[in-house]
Image (cartoon, rainbow, N blue to C red; front, side, top):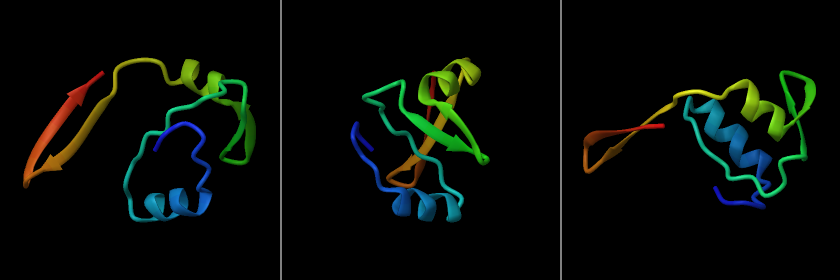
Length: 67
């Protein structure tokens, strides 16, 4: 999902289905709620900084991206 996307209903459905997603942020000072606590996107990025693995299936074959 790209910057400016604000589809909370769609995000909830994706989470309910057990899937992950990435949203690019335009404003890192924007407030979001995580487990009922208010924080900023910037603070989330700092808190979760590290290596990430993104896996998906392309033509039935699992592909991975390591960040």
